[in-house]
Image (cartoon, one colour):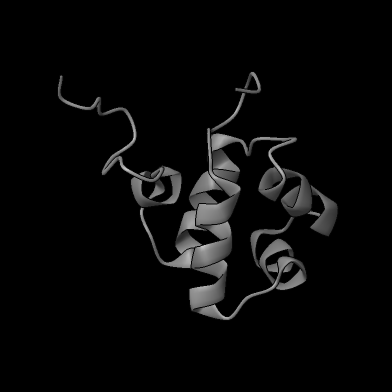
Length: 82
């Protein structure tokens, strides 16, 4: 995990973008960042700040928990049962 910022899954964000009919350029404009910043987040090279994660979740119509959800986990911060 890259230090600093929120852990997000690029594939999760892409799926949410697809559902909203947004491309990288449109999402970047709506959350007020450079297109390259969104591209780096999707590629896993950068992580968004908490503020950017909040803006992205609002634009994508999900909670921050849902934005950060990884496959197999329902909520960020929950652990699988042993």
